[in-house]
Length: 190
Image 1 (cartoon, rainbow, N blue to C red):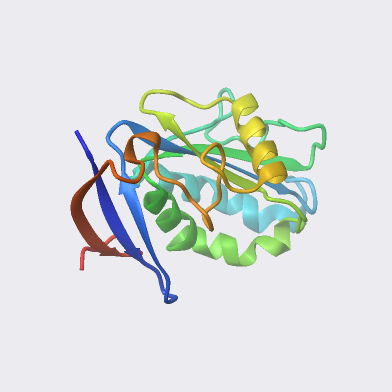
Image 2 (cartoon, rainbow, N blue to C red):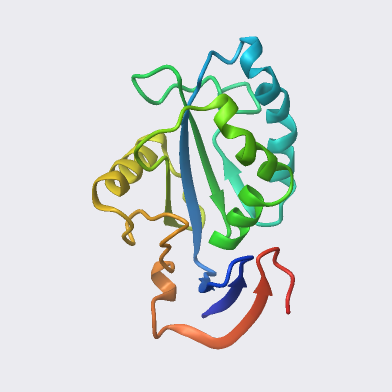
């Protein structure tokens, strides 16, 4: 099976050709440093949205998996770093476009707009993307390694950002199928 390339047209005048892989999914880690503990009034609006936002992800056709604390429906109790104020989100998606649509459009877009109310601004990348074989679930250690690599080296095929993404290993230049499906950023075909 070959990769199909999808033309994604965002609201700004730049276009991205992104292959869709039948053999790889996209892993994503992001971190956020809390301005206050989750049990404080300052964080109440954020905490109140977690369950609903996770439910939207769970129902998204491009969503595959997300890290959860044992016995919980979210990962807010997981502390992957020495700093207890840092939250980690680790998810798997079918494509860069599927993740991007979820993150920046719809209900999650509201959280992105309000994030400075709840999270400190950091002077380093807080999100890393990388390709994994279908069926593999990324670990926290793997995610930390990819994030650290991106922070040190910038976007590469090993770890990259939305701003400079890379095709999956099976969709490298020259191996992409010739059929291109133009779609808008929301996923609707043109």
